[in-house]
Image 1 (tube, rainbow, N blue to C red):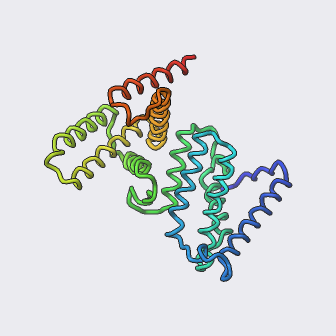
Image 2: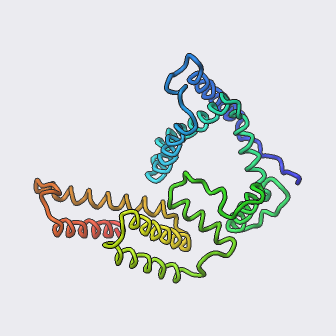
Image 3: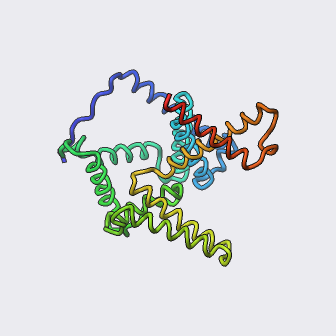
Length: 279
């Protein structure tokens, strides 16, 4: 496939600075893992670093949600360092190096954007481009089961949506949200009706089923369930903090109140938020 040339960077100086900075970071990582480097860094492996990688990715998302751009710059650096760390571990084991990581992602991006770097038409909707992306990914994977390749380490709700999307591509899906809502009601009813007869393990399983169907409803509504739950968490935090602020005006804390009063204060906080939005 003929490729369109890559655009020249706006500033060669910027590219030079980025290259020099990346080389410095790689040198720092290599020094940390050298025999006379940092004992903690030396003893790490893929499995022990992976939790930090997930944590840094979540902190990037958190900085974006808070629109804290200075913090985002810092968190992106932390996430980049995780890639460098994994690549150095791989190099130490003779598996691959950072240059191989960079080359692989660059090749992948070019291959998955034939409408930009190849001869395919650019006149495609974002939805069609997304379908093309998945088609190319499937071709790269080769023959496989429909649900293969959905990462185990993804947040559970995100992974549920991805599994359901894969299944939907081969026709295994409810035709409308009505059936999904009915299934949610069924799962919730079964959970509450049998709660006194079920073991804790069974309760956990049934609750998981309910969450899985909720994730399916999110997919049908084009809602990111992780994003929606983060927003709900933030809302709860704001309103509960407001309850504490109001109580503190009379020298009290939540434990000095009761549910009825705090529920009334919750409704007050909710009304204040709505009024502020209208204003």
